[in-house]
Image 1 (cartoon, rainbow, N blue to C red):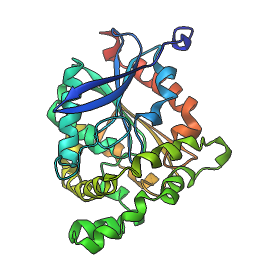
Image 2 (spheres, rainbow, N blue to C red):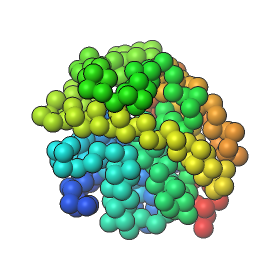
Image 3 (cartoon, rainbow, N blue to C red):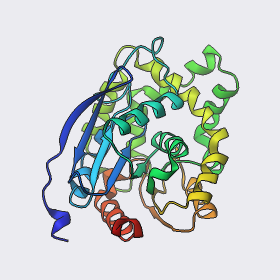
Length: 296
């Protein structure tokens, strides 16, 4: 326990990947097991700002910002393809640039399809999964997704414009507050920072492109599930059960395909780390460090 509480500085770095500057946070010993943290919408690696130093005593923790988010490049959507396939390509290049050959992944929201696409490319690299409100089953796409599904089925300018509200300040704050029992635990600088990113000129088109592209993940769900069944990565599910975007119904199917899976439904919302960060950190440490690969 003393080792896990050792103070490890967090480093803030940038690496060039596919002509884009990719910002990332990193902490922990270079020789420690690697934990790759993949953020969701509409945030950045900032969502892991407290988890990174919490886990740095046990892991080499690495958290990139995707293009269009946080401190990474934000090329115009006419010059750069904002799709989940291309974001996965960027993360793949990022992982290669750091020389990471074995790692566990913490996947949340958009980070889930990006991480699972990465797993399909390199299944031999994946040592474990931490799933926090990240979907791989159609059971998890409920009411929130109805207007987005209309956009997927018929990507008209009208259906695109109908989703613009998702980038507005009230929606960003709503994502943090909905389902949270004690909102006094929430740091308002989180949604303020996210909104600064969303309000940049050109970012709305980026977000709407990705909303459309999210529909390309759903046909891959069977492939994601096949990866689970074949490779059986040890999986810890720490899910905010009051999330309206990715409700608990999305967590329930994982044990169908995974044998070594541990599920904890937390009494909170979409951004579970904001209210249950210490519990999640402790569960990650306990779960991953007991896996057999850690001894090899």
